[in-house]
Image (cartoon, rainbow, N blue to C red; front, side, top):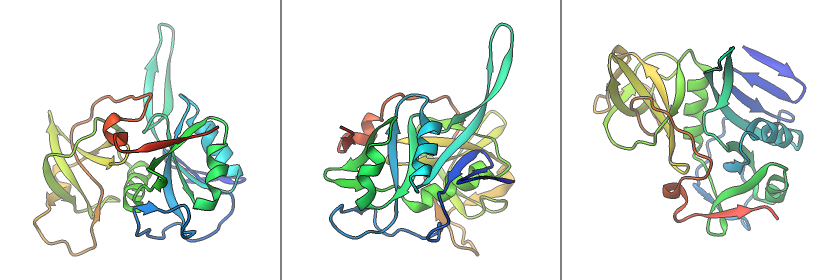
Length: 241
């Protein structure tokens, strides 16, 4: 179900924000790095925000005309006298925004944003296929939770459902199987419950095109207040002034 509210659409368990319908949102972006002095091609960036400012930042970027993606998951929090179901970011302190190099300053000057992830002098780009895979997971009928970053395991392909064609690494936890979709640049992952009957080894041919999205494993708890050292060891983070 999509609820329209002015410039914002709340879709499934994610904020999908647009100021106005512009270019096709399903454009595949070939390059992984954008030269700020080169073309004006749209690309997905990862911005690092203040703690618990992800939703506020997403809304402010939307009012500036950016398309923003903030995947969420539901978490039950309990206190002595009450309990409450909360919608929390799947990637704490990160918001994905689609922008052009010429609009870089408009992003970094947004209140609540610390920096845009970048490689040297170039903005680091999140691959389109990673964004699409996570969007399909949070908008589908799956239990999705944060998961420790993982790159090893048995690679499989989902054969049915809204994640059909997605590849990852399958790991069993007790009697359940988890599919983990990763954003390699952040060194963070999310876990999605899948049925064992809905996956097959990657070595088998697929009749449809395949979207490669990272890894699959058991769900664990993950919360980071700072960018992962593994993700930014060779990355210069651009800070606002």
